[in-house]
Length: 311
Image 1: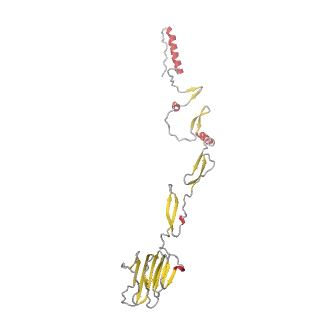
Image 2: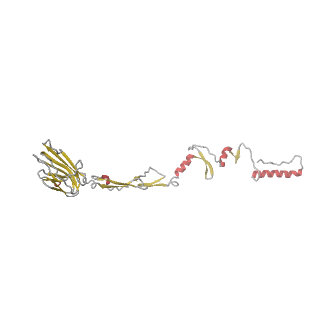
Image 3: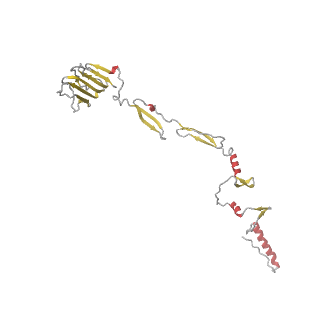
């Protein structure tokens, strides 16, 4: 607020002058000393110790702690006000940058460490103040135990695949299917696997190819009894070739094992002899049979029965 000074009244009582002047002086002293009232001079130039203050009032008001900010792209030539050991100065941003960079080895030379997590290996540390490039390698090792199942051969096949919570294959197990496939595949026949008999022939467990055929004249194949012991599967085909056009026998007949008996295409069981019938130029028997143990196959003694073990 403005300071109001009470001035003596011209022509007034001289006894009141001292009191009036003293009161006016006290008001001025209190205002200058800040005891009461304020001094608000309207100055065009403020001079302190013979130095003019050139800052504008708006510039001085920036030091008043205002919260308003002006968006600015900071450049190296920009300045900030800095207390330089007790002396206030304007300092270029380039000087600030130089100082911050020089303090890296003593103030901010911290270390960042990279550690490998689950199922990973490698890692290392990087100091922030680097004089050259540094490389950190993180590797993923072999987390699997494949039990050799990746190189299966023959009848081995993948049975099961185990995956952990991270989606890694940790195990592969394999199974040999040969037991399940027994009797289905073929093998190279050895001399002991091939038989050529004129009479009854006993075969052991396995799968066999059978053949018996007439060789000249009216020879024909006769199976005196169809095998049933230890039979698991099979089919037997009888083919006749006859010069008799009135022959009632079919030229071919097929019998299959149904688990308990041999039956033809009409479902009729066959347990007696199978002959070509009539006068034959030639005739033959062909088939396959799978047995779980010893089994005897009997044909007539003229055409030889040939058997080849397949597995």
